[in-house]
Length: 316
Image 1 (spheres, rainbow, N blue to C red):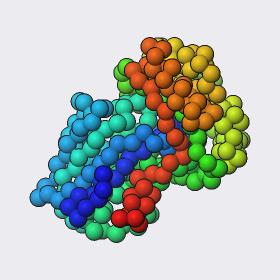
Image 2 (image 1 turned 120 degrees about the vertical axis):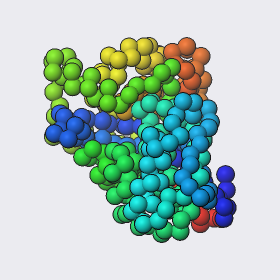
Image 3 (image 1 turned 60 degrees about the horizontal axis):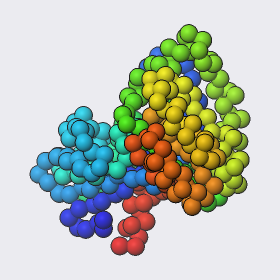
């Protein structure tokens, strides 16, 4: 979808969490995290065109039921950027959704990141990376990573990032569930399970060594080594709220995935494959297993919204 003087189109990649360790609740209601983000080439597309006001439309295979007003994070991204720059929020936004909603893939955050880039160019603002990062952090914990993509260590709420140098791309099969899970509900369930002693108490200090090991596996480009390191503190909570995910994870294991894990707050399950051909086989067999709504092969370690938009501008 090429950019033109009358519209700016930006791809918004989904994310998965290779490692997600969750601390106890903070006074502000958030949880401290230590996580390794990984961007995948399952993307929405956000287009911004000129308008006398701010409007939003949502279409695409995964767009049903999403709000097209200030409840949508993309709308809020445009409004926040306009307020920061001291301009009127005038844009016709259109989102084409391929990322499932409430799926643990940060689709809403990806749309917000792409909106920041598209509107910044539409309005000729030339905002710095630091300015966009600051706005992204105010919008949500995953929005900053969605701007940058690739792979990164995230701390705090996940908004403080340290990029990870990786050797090559990774291949995955993504299995979408029949229904979504609300992220706040999954965190509340984790807190409940911990209070009851059903899952271990958090230890973010121990997670430092874990994240270091994940970073080394990424840098070496060794899927087999990474497979043994995938971990997600939110997985027990997601399984408690959506027990059917156990059948999806079991199917991936039975079909020969190197490893399988619930992505973020779920309910999407992701399975690490040895290579592209293995990911294609695994996705086809998962789709046929009857344990998920759909499954597709994806490539991990792709550029975020800002980098993709810059690359398009360079060749246009």
